[in-house]
Amino acid sequence: MTKAQEVYDRVEALVASGVKKADAFRQVADEFEQPFNSMRGAYYAHTRTLGGAPSRPRKQAASNGDPIEQATTVLTRAVESIDAEVADAKTRVDEAKTEYEHLRDTAAERKAAIQAKIDVLKA
Image (cartoon, rainbow, N blue to C red):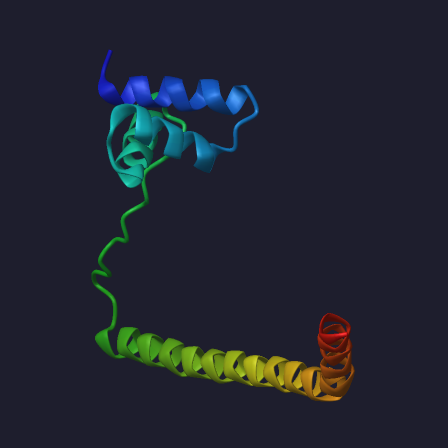
């Protein structure tokens, strides 16, 4: 039995007993006195031998395509990526503004509650 299979079997047994998979990896890492990520690597390496987790497909190099068309496609994706980054930043700004307004609007009430506790402690 390989070490990867031992790790796999042990993790699967723990998961079957109700332990979360991440916690199972930590427990097995402690048992084997190995790093957490090494146990994850061994587990998933064994799942590939079982056919359970296919490896990432390799991108095929574009061949015989028009280089101008390929360059245009890459640059168009770059422009779309920038637009997505801007939209994500706008969302974060809106969320931060909402949080700021909530904190600002509830600050007096929260301070008063804390001050009341201080006053009780001093009394």
